[in-house]
Length: 260
Ligand code: SAH
Image 1: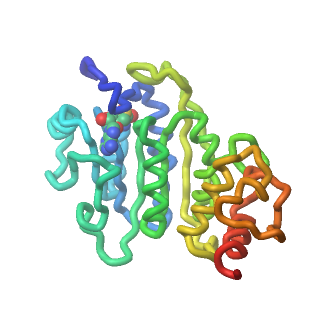
Image 2 (image 1 turned 30 degrees about the horizontal axis):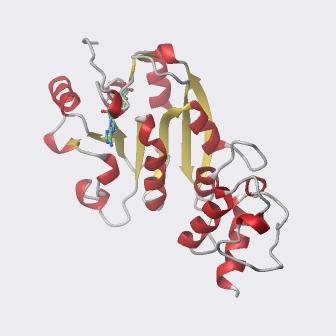
């Protein structure tokens, strides 16, 4: 790899461990044969070089850093429209990816850690288009997203994502695998959309209940949910947010908003 001048504000930590890179790429299964795969933040193309070997995939890259885009154009023979210079968070999928109606796609990347939560909130906005995600994030974030209810690190993103996706924490990558090394350990997670999981309430209201409950996560739900309800007969009133699975949050949402 050429000498790198990583831009910290863009979360640039380039993976140099090629085995880890291969493992990440191998985790992506594209079971439903969507073909279309968006790589977020390809940087110097460490994952990209293995992804292009998978001819069954139709790969599109989105990278915010001009210098990386120039590098990628020089080293890979992608048609112009497959390398998008821009911000993933601002991307309009339908337009930029020229999605056909009902077309679904996947996401892969060694994500910029400073925006990994925002990436997953955007995934949630497009949960019916995005079927599979393989991503490297800060280890704690990955563990939190995959964490089951009853655990200390179970939080807002765990509930929201688990309501739609089957999630597994796959493996840990240590700082020495990157150039420059980040201060934290990293973890790779895989999410697969599970259509058996049908949210039996309005998503916005569900999100509001989950966020409100975790806002004061140490309090019992009877107190934590005061900002949105004063029902005396609230189920799980003496439990805390981290003790409930997504179905129990659905139950709460329906009671608070839909059956009054
Ligand atoms: N995939 C590469 C680089 C990972 S570092 C590797 O594994 O080595 C994260 C990358 O995300 C950087 O290249 C950075 O420029 C890019 N990036 C940061 N913010 C972004 C955003 N909002 N949209 C798209 N790419 C972004």
